[in-house]
Length: 113
Image (cartoon, rainbow, N blue to C red):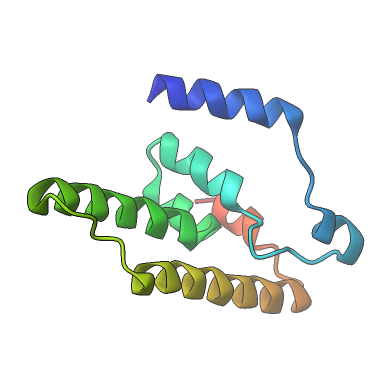
């Protein structure tokens, strides 16, 4: 876990900015992913899910695939798994966009938890 934090801290220094958010003022479907990863690495799975559900969904899916590929000795990744992560990403993006239009700062709400 320590190595993951060091790698994340290296990339957080670069501070990549979302071009879509800078141009339009709206979040892109990937916005919140860095916050979610950071929350997850610091032991806050609920915050991680609220920041970006696809991160938690991807981690759980990866664990599922690793465990069952070891047990069954074959790959368990299916197209349906990938579609599930994509659907979660699109749904959370739509919800965040609606909240943004309504003037709700969802990031501040999650930070307050």
